Image (cartoon, rainbow, N blue to C red; front, top):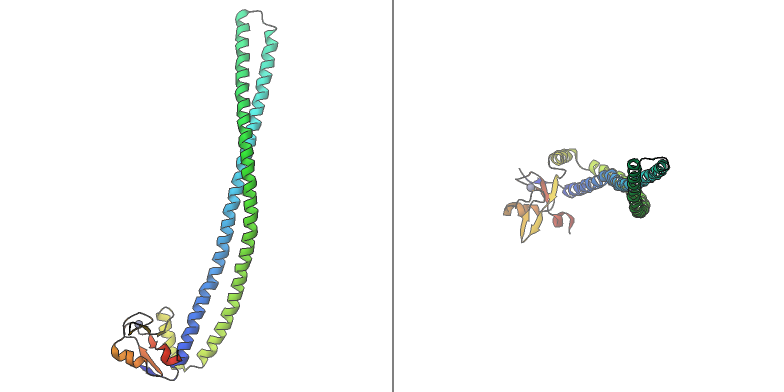
Length: 247
Ligand SMILES: [Zn+2]
C-alpha cells in the first residue's frame, strides 16, 4: 500500500494519542469496582477470623460449664453414697460403696483439673479474641477510608473520561471522513492502535505497533513531512514523532 500524504497526519496522530489515553483511563475506571470489592473481601476474611475467635471462646465456656455440672453430679453421688454407707449392714456392700465413693472423688479430681486447664485456655482465647476485635476495628476503619478514596478516584476518572471523550469527538469531527473511516477500521482490528509512532533504536526504525523493522525506503519516507507510512506487516499507519511534532 502506498504512503498516505496528508496535511491531517498530525491531527490523526494526535487523535490516536487521545484514544490511547481514553483506553487507559477506561481500564483504570473499570478496575475501580473490583478494587473496592477486594478491600471488602479482605475485611470479610478478618471478620470471619474474629467470629472464629469468638466461637472458640464460647466453646471453651460451654466445656467448662459442662465440667462444672459433672463436678456437681460427682459431689451429689458422693453424698448419696455416704448416706447409703450409714444404712448398710453387709460388709461387702459397705466396701462396694467405699469404692464407689473413691471413684466419684477421683472423677471429681479429674474434672477439676480439666476446669483449671479450660480456665487457662479461656484466658488465652479471650486475649486472642480481644486482639482480633482490635485488628478488625482498625482494619475496618482503614478499609472504609481506602474504599472511599478509591470511590473518589473512580468519580474523578469518570469526570476525566467525559472530558477526554468530548475533546476526542471534537478532534475527530475536524478530520476528513475518509481518513476517519480508515482510522476507525484499523483501530477496531488492531487492538485500538491504528496510528503508531516509529521507534528508533541503534539507528534503526521499527513499527511502534508490531515492532517490525522498516526498510530503508520506508524509514526515509516516514521522515517526510505530512506522511503516514503503511506498515507492510500490521498495516498500521506509522509516523515519525519528531517530523510531525518537532520533538
Ligand atoms: Zn507494524
